[in-house]
Length: 114
Image 1 (cartoon, one colour):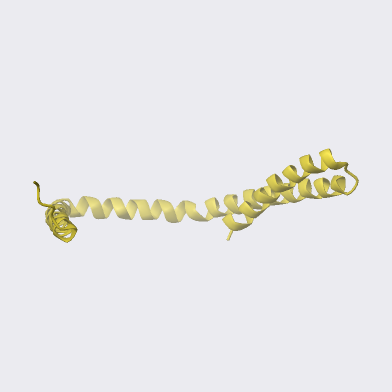
Image 2 (spheres, rainbow, N blue to C red):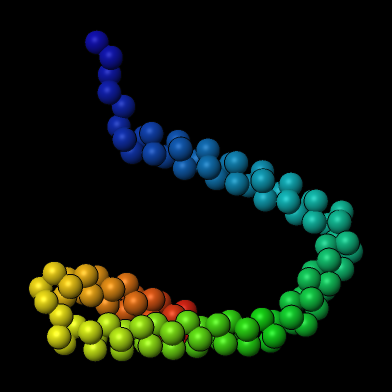
């Protein structure tokens, strides 16, 4: 009959293996970085400069799109609520679905702009 090993024993060996693999990978990464340090630093400076150059216009575009989509969804919600007032039961349920759809779009634009 086969003896059952402790789960602590198995978990300990797995963690030791992970530490060993992580240590080797970290050591290799440091060596590679040291060998390519000048090129990596120049690349990071280039990337940072590019991001700084385009981040403000990109944020303005995102803000404008968010406001436009939010206003459109509010416009659609206003029309849905107006129609809901006088709707029969079947149409009311259709409009209730529309209200959920446009309401979700409105709140998703509000949270994405925060």
